[in-house]
Image 1: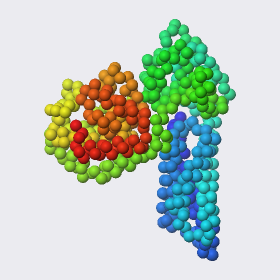
Image 2: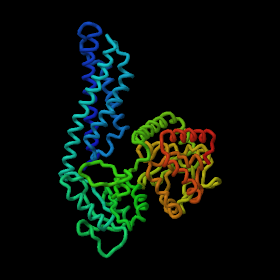
Image 3: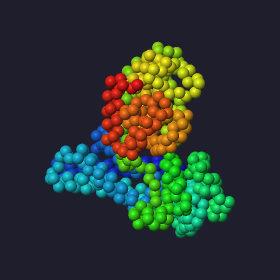
Length: 471
């Protein structure tokens, strides 16, 4: 199973169908709309204007599909939902194209506007949906025949887990669950589920098992007596890029928590990772990329000045890099302009303070205006970070923080950022206690994530930069 290849397949077909649809509409306008306007047959010429439209219109559609989340969960698509999604996006996209590109066309009658709009919509929708339907149908059939499967881990070991396993395995059509084993919550001499699938550890090993066995889906099938562990289990799983499902009780069913997504699947509650609407999540990523490229280009003279300043301030390399922990707990290398003397952490990781003698004079200037963080535009560009998000920390300090504040791991639900609400409200932390104080602001940010909040944080960050209040 290759998710990237499957995504590329959809992208290529979407680009091709968008190009074909626009070409057909271009010809339609020449034959019907312009001919009626001028009273004679208009020759079909594929000029520069046509080719520019072909490139930009096709790119517009791909961006629209990405923002609305069409390329997410590429192997878990519903054909009926895909039909509605394609119809809705086509309607919105054609409306935008109509008002920006078609409304100023020369026409014989206002009725031609209706004809142009409906023709473009029908051509684009039909040509786009047919290849999608074929790809999705073939993929779903492969899942039903167990040719494609999702590595699935069961948390639980008693009767509920057994009942769930037998229900899923006895279905006429496979749901794609490829059970790799189960882990127990409470230790026992014997587990009912081990008669069916392998016992691969207990709940304390969940983190390592998910990483080592490439788990894509986790089903929590615990008994009522084990529900005291449910919150901690979900908290742990939310740090991982896995699909989380829970066996519901009757209360969950009656209150509408159980949403039916497939006719053949078991009744399960899907625990969503989503903290923002999907379109905002993807638009945030697009803003990150555009903002990073813009930052590199516009601030290139400033980059040159800072490189010279760092080089002249003390001996050593211009850039400083070390490992920090990002989304889903994955480590990455963060880049900064070096603001300290070489060998400042020879005795181990240490947080900086307001009057830290390890900081160079030029480094102090950069920290006050937070210019030392500018190389992190590269981290944003490659997807390790975002412009706005909780500041990433080193594992050394995370291990200390979680002893006092276990909820710190909630920050790993999102990409870390160059700036954050905690950074704006609290500033740099000089010790673990201050990190914990700053934590509450980042938790509140995560629970209220939106593009509006991001924009406000960016505005306040720019004010801090110009006022030099970074330290």
